[in-house]
Length: 457
Image (tube, rainbow, N blue to C red; front, side, top):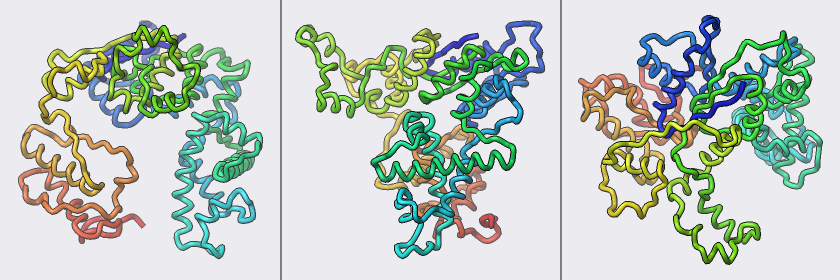
């Protein structure tokens, strides 16, 4: 058992390596036991299935799971006491527990003053949208509590130990979190169906002496993690414990083949300069040598690469920087996008290019004054490219947003002056004519044209 780490700046070399590793090494292996591939989202799972199917003509008997579900199954296979079977306290279950707490909060609790001020009127009466506010707040708290357990376990432990807090907002979250744990324990006893978060279950199973001794073995042997873009300290510790019981393969994107973990963001550089940390001061010999200033940091990685830098550093710590490199270089850098990709791969600075790049359509940046103009720009670009390229399909177009909730339907800013019915011969316009006409006036969820399906009651 052990852990193998694969890096590449392109998805296709990683998919090729996954295809190679999915082939059974032992001819006597049971063909009915499917290999497990853990992916972060549905879109990557679909792309991977189609890509591997094109390579083999027939692609079947491979089990795809998401990160939380896959890790839960791995821990469960090592549980020496599987009865009663613990159930994952996922985000949906956590939201329901928090919603129950928020709908009947303790109005006399001093720690709940921030929540009561948000949920109640100034005179203590109920708001007309109390249920909506409670549900929205429970969604946000569920997300935060999971992130706290993954990234700030020390703070969560202080909450459980009932250590005093000085910040009123932290005290409010602490009260709700402890109340949620009490409610969860009551639910466990009444239903005999123990609910456990990923952190709780991992500590119960992996930190006991009998872990992995159920029936002498476990059904899973090789597990593949494909496309991990972010990893928390908790997941790092969990994989480090699991690698002694499983053969783990991790396939991750890395934009550069060079070492770039020492590239700091502009804010980090300002912090170092402002605080003047003694441990980071340069000696006179280093200043005179000037070696540390011979090359400037890559501007793009410095500005936007902090999250990827931390994740790659954590992954490399799992294998003590022993990884398999599968980087591929673009043979011709004849566009803006390929030139930027080459710069990221080799860490070539901006000064390495003698002349500014000629603007093309491979990478375009548009400054929009608001969300509505952003949507209009994307919409018009899609129509323009569909009409210009007859071979372009809707499945070839992806729209990615930084904040999904900001662009949800029902927010009154969608309106287009150019109806798609102008292109009746276009199948895309036929499919989208009704949804787009829906946004011609008021764009609330209750506004639907006649003959179309209204909102679900």
